[in-house]
Image (cartoon, rainbow over all chains, first blue to last red; front, top):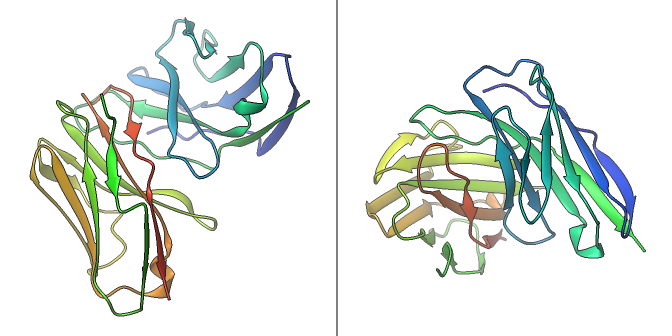
Length: 111
Length: 113
């Protein structure tokens, strides 16, 4: 699976959009980009995933560059409850499902 | 759906004792994963199963660790004998298919004294 690079931390003001970057320059054509987050003392929570098209759901939007070497997770209106560690993961779509989590980005939403 | 259920939520034991962690995946999910999380090493994949068969156990730290999945609705992770360095939060997760998102339980916090 391709390796991902994320900033270790970032701050965001409550009510503003949070844009979380992820680099995955070695991504292959059959690899999806997944985003998870982990709120303190809870299990990781799935947010969104995509292959090459931009995706949106009730939680966030995922923007993938045309060359697929990077992506951005957008939380449109950050709240204090969005304070968490956010993980960007790239995974192949073969039959041997396997997720490897990196260090992630610690996002702190401030009032 | 009740989600992935792990038990116990907390476990405190003495060094040398056997510890068994339990997991009930979401019904119908074909994949089950065991992860361990520590401050130093983050989230580590220990082992995963597909249709109750262990596929990759390369993350299991040593022979003291073993995992089983006797049926589609139950899995155990056993540590025998336990050591203080095994102290961590252990998560179980399941997914429907290879490309499906993982659903995590709330973890078992293990403390070995």
